[in-house]
Amino acid sequence: MPRAKLKAQKQERAAELVRPLPQGGAWITRAREAALARWSEMGAPLKRDEYWKFTDPRALIAEGTATAAIQDTSDEAPMFDAFDRVKLVFVDGVFDAAASDALALEGVEIGLLEDAAKADLHWAKDIYGTLDARAQTPVERPLASFNTAYATQGVLIRVTGTPAKPISLIYRRSADGSDALLHHVIRVEAGAEVTLLEHGPLAARSNTVIEADIAEGATLHHIRSQGRDHARMGASHIFAQLGAKAQLKSFTLTVNGQLTRNEAQVWLDGADGSAHLAGASVGDGAFHADDTVFVAHNAPGCESRQVFKKVLRHGAVGVFQGKILVDRVAQKTDGYQISQALLLDEDAQFLAKPELEIYADDVKCSHGSTSGEIDATQLYYMRARGVPEAEAKMLLVLAFLAEALDEIADDALAGDLRDRLEAWLQRHK
Image (cartoon, rainbow, N blue to C red; front, side, top):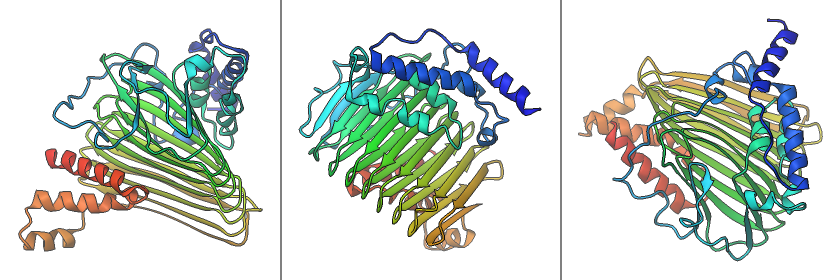
């Protein structure tokens, strides 16, 4: 199809989804209007787009309310329940004040997007929509701009110190039919450090954005476990810009879900910054999980890691598209990228597009992507030592996923996820 005709098709589909913008103060109205203009100009994503060729986006932008049966997890302890944390609860994508803790934590300012949107001025104005706009090159991300234009729910977190406990965003569902747009803005001031947890089923279909500004010497730890409803669909976006000596560590666990697209764009803008992005996916049957990750090295002496592991069976599909982009000024860059899939049968599929684009000459960058079955020799030796076959396979799966889980800095949180993952695998071995 000619490029002009394809563009017209994308714009026509985008126009069908345009509706009046939410009311708000001057700062957010400007951001929403700019985002809507981007959405209308870019058009809706299509499978013909280069970075959507492995994932069909039609279900993510279909009209009407999406439906997905709610997974019964009543026999499980709530995620991260053993940890002291500030709990902020969203039900069907709407903040539930009665179920949440007070929006108070020493060293942190926490607000709601719906409240801030009523003001004519807010600290979030320098971030909300700004990173979304920046993330549209070199690859267009129209679903993020749609979110920026229409989201009315989310949290605004400004960190000025090192709070004593994590901030936990808890997502719950009450109805089989639900669509949700959430937009979170995070500013971690110079030298500050915070841990953000996300977990639970947000909606039958969701579109989320996190925009994070991490200042000089600041650190953001982000740990996310996506809801396990079998038929859920969702697109998530993490956009983060890092100052000098700033750090980002983000980990996502994806189990179940009919269609999941996790996008990340990180800019290392200051010298000696560090960004680690990792993910573990476990899919069975009608499961499609796509991790699309870009890390831009724009300053010297920075380090980045992309570690993504997927375990797939019964026709499940895993996708990884990752890029390390090194600017000519980013000498002494250390970039590492690995994506691997463990295919538990012949029906599972792993599609990968690893990329390096390097314009500096004094760098250390590597990438690799592999897929294969469980090692028969390892399985044989475990069986020879009396380990039942199903148990041996489960242990090998956990060992395969360990490199991604090791990217979590907090050993206790990582251990909690390992234990939970082992329990899930035990049920389905």
